[in-house]
Every structure is written in structure tokens, then in C-alpha cells.
Length: 389
Length: 244
Image 1 (cartoon, rainbow over the protein chains, first blue to last red):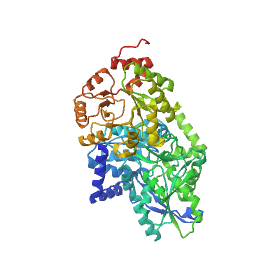
Image 2: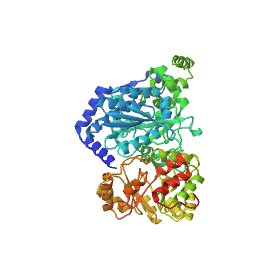
Image 3: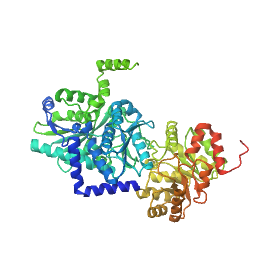
Image 4: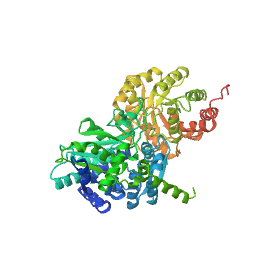
């Protein structure tokens, strides 16, 4: 509790300090390439012959995803609190790489907790975290994915709270994390709203974002909450909602309200309250809970939640790469997939924004498997032979 | 006080362990209803939670286990679990069923009392003790407020961190327990990291209940039921029963 109070007070002080946001903008501008562009997707627009499609390019952040926005902001808070060590959980590895990068830049000691399953499917991110000087701890408990990494990070934090800040990567967990993560990610929506007005002279009809924990979605949605723009969250439909093998907390009726990992929200859980296994082709969406702020926005009807299946997501990635030369992360491809189901039925006078929260080249092993790419497999076989396998 | 995870390694074996601990002179026992995300627990109890769930430890089966045990042992029993379990079961229903099973109260480590009015009300309505927790960095004023809301005993977490890791039984801990003693008239229990007689001896005089949790499960895992009970007996000083 004392640690939460210290963090709450540091966050509140920072928000009141007008120089803090200016310092944050300087940092993300000089180090992470902000503002990121809003790109008109002309070929996709022609392909679907419906609404004009714009893409918010969070993939162009340093380290390749929106995670940098939150991590760099929390890094400034860590400096203000005078701590020297940061820890983080990671699912897909993007938040881990972003945190390790921030720690390297600020000179913090860094430990990243990552489920063993995710370590196996995102080895390249593990490699980079280690090169950046972080210690990566594979978590072998439970389902060995993101939720278990979060548990282990909390265990570290309660043990080492005096020296350590927990850089939680998404808008979940106990107060002040959901609000704090939304605060730093709101830069996405601020920019996107100004950019679409500048480029088209009007607000978009819809904004699409993928929803794992919910940080990129809240970041872009936050810019449009007071507008008439419809906000659409795309969750992981996995093998299909009807199979039960998915991670759709708000788009399915399979989740119920619970209290775990320090917060109350919709969880995919059994009637007894035990967390269930989730499934998604995208490690970053493979999580049992969802931001309590998004749960409120669902209940108030402000955000509509849908689910895209693994198959739809891989198809959306393939189409986006061919038509636009953009490779969305598998996570972000959920937002593309959902938009692709809907844009053709909108008039060409409407615009939509899709948040490309991250770039997909990190997913090469998973994507190559999904495409069942024979030449890639041959390359891996040769590589393995080269290592004496 | 000792700790078992209901259904670990199996219902039959956790039953035998609980009975053996009572024979070994334990005066109070925590029965953990397993949860998939036991955030306050270290590796030993965490693994036990997972195994118990795999072995089918549903909440109704855990309540039934407690009812049968309470009917057969002369010591008070406490449930220990995480908040989502009573929350999903229904707070009033959980308290009523815990009462009818014959337990004395419950420890819920992930629930700060400020966020728990409904839980506290449901427990008190059944005459059950909501056992609340203190940590070494809890300020005096908050200790007093927690103590006012809890009952039965106050659980003093001996150090920052999770169950099962090493605790330094030294002067700082004594000062912390002194602060807890001044904050409350409730009996004080001390847990997290007690592994040997010397640790129990350190607690004696400074608190009222020594809690041994992970260590007896570790001995059980390594050397079996009889060794776990012998370990408990080495702490309580009870005479070996004729059955051994």
C-alpha cells in the first residue's frame, strides 16, 4: 500500500507540473519519432470501395510499437521518485523490449518477466532484451503466459519495493496504473484527432483498435471520447468464439466480473473464479483480463467490442502488406481485420482510422507458420543444420 | 498455526496432513482454498495451488473438506484464499457456508480493508473473524485502523515479499511487532519465512501465534507426510503419538 501511495503521489505531482508534459513531449519527440504519422491507405480504400481508410502509425515508434509512449513516461516518473531499478511483464515481448530500452537509456537496472510459452514464441525479442542489458526471467507457473508474468512481477515488486518501480505495460492492475497508462498513451489520440482534422477537415466515423490489456485502444479512443465518432475495440477471437479458445473478454459472453491481479474487471474465468486459459495467435492479446476503464466504456455503451479470429487476422495482415506495404503486428492486425469486415458498408464520404499499434516483422516465425511458408521452413532447417542440429 | 492447501497433493493426502499436524500439537490451522493467481505466495505454495486445482479442488469440495475436518479436530480453523473466490461464490453465501462448515474466520491477503466493506460486513454478520494483515512498512495510524476493522487475530507479515522466502529474524522485526502490539489488543500472528525452532522462539513473547506455511509443505514434498508431521512436532514440542 505504501508503494502505491508513493507512485500515486509522484504521478499526481507530475500531472500538476506543467513542465512534466513538456519534458515528456521532448523525450518522445527526440527519442521515439513522435508525432507518428497518420497515413491514408489509398489502395485498401480502393479495394474495399467504402469508407476512406487512415492508419495511425504507432509502429513507427522507437522499438516498433505504442509501448514506448507509456514506458518513456514511466521512466521520467522513476527518475522523479529516485529509484534505480525497473521491472516489467511482457507478453509479445514488445513491452519488455521497450522497457529494456528505456532502462538502458536512463541507466536503470532492469528485469523482465515473460511467460515461458511467450519466450518460446518470441525468442527474437528475448534476444534484444538481453542485448539491451535486461535480465529476462521465464515464468514457468500457471499458463506460462502474460498473466503469470504479471503475477511474478508483482511478487518481485512487493519484495523490492524500496528500490524498484514496476513498469506495468497496460491499463490494468491496481490504481494508479490504468489511469497512468492511459495518460501517457493519450498522446496517440491527441495526435490522431488533430491529424485527421487537418487532412480531411472532419472527424472520423469510426476508430478501430485492438484490445489486449487495452493500452493502445484507450490511447487512441481517449482523443475521441467527447466526439460522435464510433469507437470499436477488436479482441482476440482465437479459433472462434464458439470454440471457447479465444481471449475475448468484452466481445463474448464468456467473461464475468471478478477481482484479480489487483483490479476488478471482466475476466475469462470458471464459475469458481479460477482464471481460464486463453488463446490467440497474438501473444500480446492472450490475456484473461481487460482494462477496467474499457470495461466501463463497454457498460456505458461508448465503445463497441468485436472479435477477429486468428484466420481473419492473418488474412488481414497479408492484404495490408500487399496493398499498402504496411506490416502490422499480429495484435494490430485484429483492428485491421475488424475494420475490413465493416468499411465496405460505409459510404466513401466517411473516414475511419485504424490504429496500427505495432509493426509485424517481430512476428516472422508465427506469421511464417500461419502462411505455412515452405521456403521459410527450408531456411530454418538449413540454419539448424548449420548449428549442428 | 500451520497452513495446508486443500486438495494438495490430493484430497486424501491433504486430509492426512491436516490430521497429522493436529496430532503434532498445532493449535490453529489455515486451510487454503486454491486460486489460479496466488499473488502473495512464493513457489512452494504457488505450485501446490496449481496441483490442487488440477486435482479438482473446487470451492464446494473445499467447503466440504473444512466441514469434515472441523467436525473431527478440536482446534480452530481459518480459511485462507484470494478475494476472487468469495467474490465469485457470493460474499454472503461464502460467509454463511464457511460458518456452517465450522471455520472461525478467513484470511484474504489481496484485499485491503478499505476496499472490503461488503466482505467485512458479510463475515461479521455470521460471527466469523475477518483476519487482516499488517506489513513492516504499515504506518502506525493505518495499523490502528486495520486493527479496528479486523478480528480474531492480526496477521503480521514478517517482511516484504511473498511466502516461503528467507526472513531475517532480528531487531527490526521486534520493533515492528512492538508497533503492532501497541496498535491493537488483538492477538498477533507472525508469518512468512518461519522455518525452524529458532524462528518460533524469536516470535515467542513478541507475538502470540507463529505461522509455519511453506516450510512444512516443502518438507512434505521432499520427505513425505511423516517427516512433515515430525517437523511440526519439533516446533510445538508435542510428544510423539503412539501411532508413530
